[in-house]
Image (cartoon, rainbow, N blue to C red; front, side, top):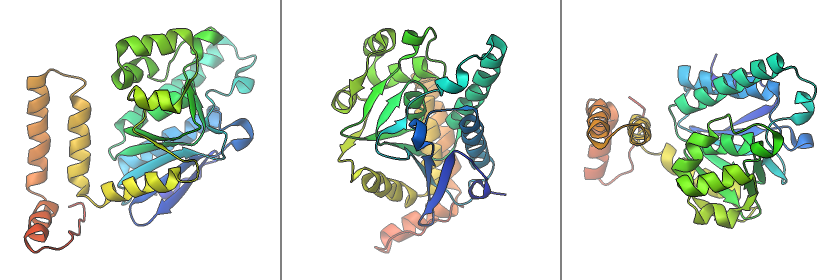
Length: 267
């Protein structure tokens, strides 16, 4: 079984071309809120992509509808949960986050509407973000008596800087897409109708590059946030050397010299 064979209840999968996977959070009636089933679905999707990419080279993650990417945790489902039930559900969300972080291929968030609380954390877990001009963002957890628990306190400072992240997290106030782009959290703003097309264009560009090289480069860039320069560069060299013996390395050099487009096979 590959990721494309998964039977998911809250996430719809669509292959775009040969190598791009479009994953759509699909609970529009509740603004794609994150419930327990979506936690299972996303965890299982990321785990399966780690185990068997099935020719997937890039993942695009978006939400169904025009109102929301993901409104955060489903608070109606959480109403009345015991402390133990809450912790068990959150442990699932923790597995989901860790599996997303481990996903080897690049992941682009196409934020089509509101990305609040856990929804924003899911977007932050992607490698980068394109957003509709009408999108809005917030980490609202402190207004609800909790705090970010899906890596928001770790990922947001890396995106916008420590002082800005503290302001966003400690106030819980929403901010708009223009601010998100200015602060470095969003890479590109798009018209709502053009968002998915622009994200897929970038995804196709990445998918056209040598997949082993792309995955190794992603690992090395991620490692740069987790270690000092010397160890980070040592990691980069190890990642680089993994590409030298590949068929794709030979194909890339040959294609350049023969003035043609390379055909990469991930070998």
